[in-house]
Image (cartoon, rainbow, N blue to C red; front, side, top):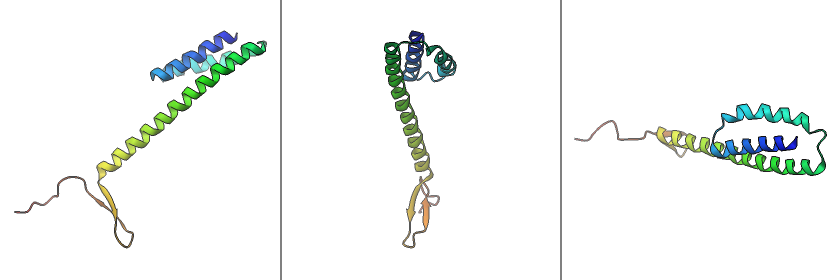
Length: 106
């Protein structure tokens, strides 16, 4: 019983490591259904399963941190493309457009 749950957790972790997040759609319901089959498992099997679950949870947390960092970086790039934000002495915010000026000196 726990071997099937361990294998499912391993597959979840492999999908996350490979970046195959769509595979999680199929694996998570399977993992939830395995939860109900653990009631008769012995302590040693449950300890192995707990270790596998911990490894998988750590992997998921690291993947989520990576996604958050990528979103933050994307936002920074988008903001940088808008122009330079400055403040005057009164604290008023102004944006200097990015790129060449609109008028040219002759």
